[in-house]
Image 1 (tube, rainbow, N blue to C red):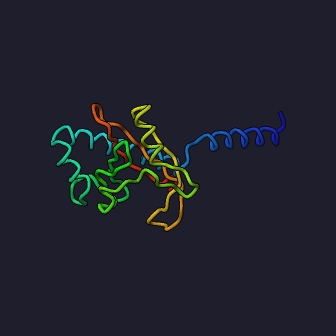
Image 2 (cartoon, one colour):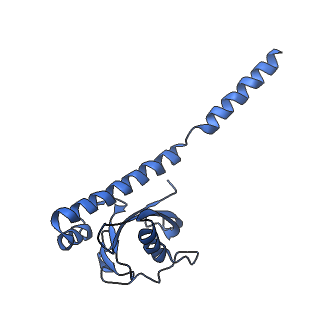
Image 3 (tube, rainbow, N blue to C red):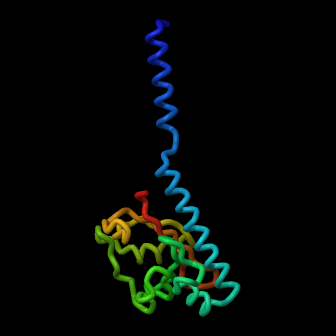
Length: 160
């Protein structure tokens, strides 16, 4: 093999290795997903510990220990009624059942379906990011609490 062929082969091998490496953005999204799942699980533990009435209050107030920057918990019942919302307390008591994303997707209904049929999972949709003021891809982890009809959720923006 000629020297130029060896150099080309080595260069191609390096390209394959670099292409297979996770990008910082991908790492950031995975870390964000783990944080969202952990927050939902902490919320479920908190409900079991203090009861739903106190927990729902704790989830809704900013200093309740369940809001961390862009991460917050929300709770919705099977009819789309918001029971707690760490991002916007004014939404508590409002029905979000017919809420659509930028593409017309009834994402609250998708949350309900996911939590009812699978118990837990991720739902993707597009929503306005309050930081960038742009509509961006968002993914929300929802999980139905055993023995209840409602689910807890925490969403992340996918563009980091």
